[in-house]
Length: 168
Image (cartoon, rainbow, N blue to C red; front, top):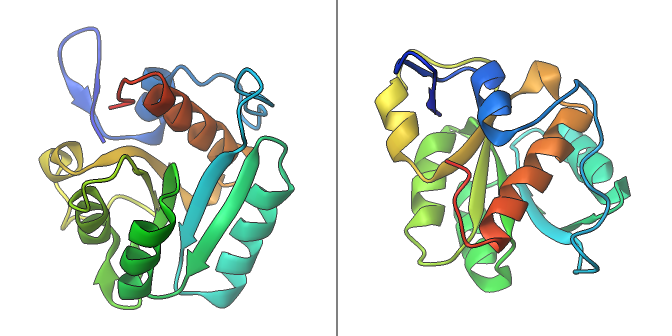
């Protein structure tokens, strides 16, 4: 995920992503509603049952969000995302031996308006800044920062999507 800095350089870090998306305050809650619209529909993909359950609980418990599906498998995720059509897909960087960035590419190739948020324990050397910038990933969130910051990012990328723009 690249974010343009004032001097024209690019930065793939969460700090830059947060600034580019206009996020303020660690742990700040996202907007509760979108002008009376339905909650943001979210699909969650992680191959660790405990992490998946925690993410689903966190997102579903937050006002303004609804988990419409989840999976521990990349192929199941692609099939269900195509069928369900959530607004946002939250994808782990590694899903049962499948690269999360590639999964986001597959989701982007479905021809839907699903926005992908990639979760990672750290930017991997196999992902270059360019690869992340070219992939249909609207935000990268470090797992160490997942609390309400994930909800904040989901709210922001869904808002950019519903406004017809891109959070990229």
